[in-house]
Image (cartoon, rainbow over all chains, first blue to last red):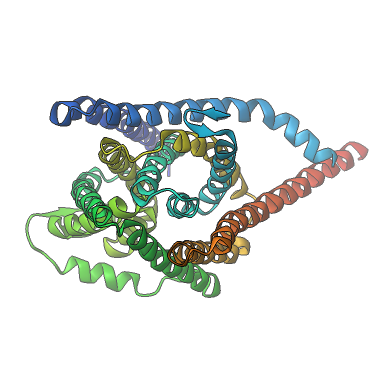
Length: 80
Length: 334
């Protein structure tokens, strides 16, 4: 595979990932926005919204924590 | 002391159990969902709340899983949309069935009985896989059989297969019903169905199934939350632990051989089935000791298997870091 093909494949993967991530964010949110019109259950919407928000916060938070802690952890493991 | 209507000890237990489940899920790529509902049943939650909370947990982990994947390779949107539609219908039907059993006062028994069968059969499959080195038998034959159904409309899928939309819908409804009834994501069924049944590549199947599970479990959570059958504090605590555990488990896959530990995982699934069954027996016959044994069994085996993964991971890291350090010292000496 040439460099250009590899670049094209990588760009396509990134754009696919973007579409998927956008879908993940937009679809549940759309469900949340549309569903009250049918059921009027705000508490259920809040539950889904809360879990979605917590998942996003945990993903970002643990990512940052892992980046900060990894070098120190490696050092400790190397010294044992 | 209570926090959000939940005792501190229960919050702590949920975080720790979430951590163990997360390690298993991150390492094996499955087992996240179908251990949470039995565990909630074992600690005494009613079946609708255990199933609803299980689905909410699946929603959270699948969103994190989707974000962690970052790049999927490929996603078949046609398959995701068609099967997602089927699964949504199935979840609605499965939820109604469960609430029907709840009205009859039989929900705990039915869910526990199905879980005993499910955990037992998946556990035995994993055990067989470890003995046969995971060799897939007859996968191509199943794909060919599925493709002989040509009822229009048909869709072309990645991998070159052409499958009837009706077949995808029926499979989606069936998995959705299981998901709605038991609170599982269905990934352990979706992946083999997509790869062996529809003949699509494993990477596409993984990307498609996780996207689909995120959307359908959001719907399932919503349906159960409408009936006030989701324990948000428990799900929140489980997610705090599992998000961290999944990172540890995923890192461990890079240095630990899955085949070395898969046998333990099979034992964990089987003991989960035994624990769920014995909880029901303890309720029927009023045997308090058996209930305690069930709790110890499900939490103890989860702890043992996760512990084995972490131990192997630390040993592998220490070894590789030691080797790198020694190479560096030798390099400097020369």
